[in-house]
Structure formats: structure tokens, C-alpha cells
Length: 260
Image (cartoon, rainbow, N blue to C red; front, side, top):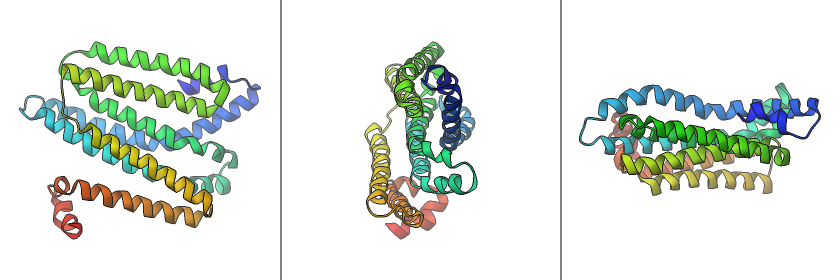
């Protein structure tokens, strides 16, 4: 919706508006790396959710799946956010240097796509309880929020405003689905832990941004710092989830004992 509305609400000459829209469209493709993973997950998860629905521990299974889904999304977010300078280098040297202007909103778009993925994960409740009308209402409300925020924010912030509108829409859809789901089909999600993982990822990205800005903008330094922080998050998650990860055949046999 943001890309459809953009040129109609931005206060710029047509040519410049098309130029900004082109930048936004290209950086949106980077954030789509998260979406690709989400779509692959949906194809596998929905049949699994319905097959599990008759089991006594179905809700606990859904909560466990959600936890590892969020962890996987966090890794994808960090992979994108910590190595944005590689995309900047590619754009500058091999494609169109102006595309690099919009890279600062990629983490916001990627985080928004994570919220959309969580929403898809949460949506199992209205499918299992035959309350699909709530899913439709949430989607319509999300579209309305996107349109209103685009009209307000794009003239002020241009493609940053479009990214914020997308982010807020997906955040609303996620929170609404969670609150309604807990009312009609309670699932014991580890909410505090999941929020902590997401917040930690954002903080890691901000630390990387600050360190690169204050010490050195060189590509090698950015990649080295990003790699260190990515490994730190890997270590942190592995420590926290050691018991769960030990249940996986390969990880539990070869990896967990080495870090325990």
C-alpha cells in the first residue's frame, strides 16, 4: 500500500517522487529476505498447526514453535541490519549509488516484517476456533492504519514515513491478534522472553551503528564488528536455550556439549 500511495501524497515534482519511490522499492526488496523466510515457514507450519490441534499439548507446541520462529527471525534481522554496509558497497560500486540513500530504513522494514510473521503465527487461533471474521477485521484495520499514516507521514518524512507506516501497521496487527487470541484460544507464549530477544537485536544493531560511526566507517571494520555482534547473539541464545537446543539431534549431539 505504501508504494501505491507514495507518489500521490508526497509533495515533490513527479520525476523526483518517482526517483524516491524507486529507492524505496529497492530497499524494500532487502527487507523481503525476512518475508521469504516467513512465507516458507507458513507453507510448512499451517498444516502442522491443524494436525496438532487435536493433541492435548497443542498450545504448548504452538508456543514452542513461536519461540524458535522469533529466534530465527532475530537472526535474519541481524544478518540484514549488521551487514547493511555490504549492500551500500554493492550499490555504490556496481548498481545505482542513489539506492544507498534509503538503507537506513531497512532495519525498520525488516523489524516490521518480523511482526507480520509473528501475526501469521498467531493467526492460528481464529482458524482453529472458526472466527475468521476477526482475521478479516484485523487486516482491514491494518490497511486503514497504513493509508492514514502514509497520508500523514510521507509528506513529512518521505520514504522513512512510508517505512514507519508499514511498521506501525504490522505492529498493530500483531498486538491485536495476540490479545484476541489469548481471549478465545489461550496459548502460553513466552512473551517476556520473545520481547527480550527482539529488543536485544535492536540494541545490538544500534550498538553496531554507533561503534562504526564513532570509530571507523571502513567496510572491513563494519563487517568485523557486525560479525562479532552476530556471534555474541548466537552465543547468548545458545546459552539461554541450551536445554531446548539439546533436544535437536545434530545440535544437541555436536554443539551443545561444547558450550555447556
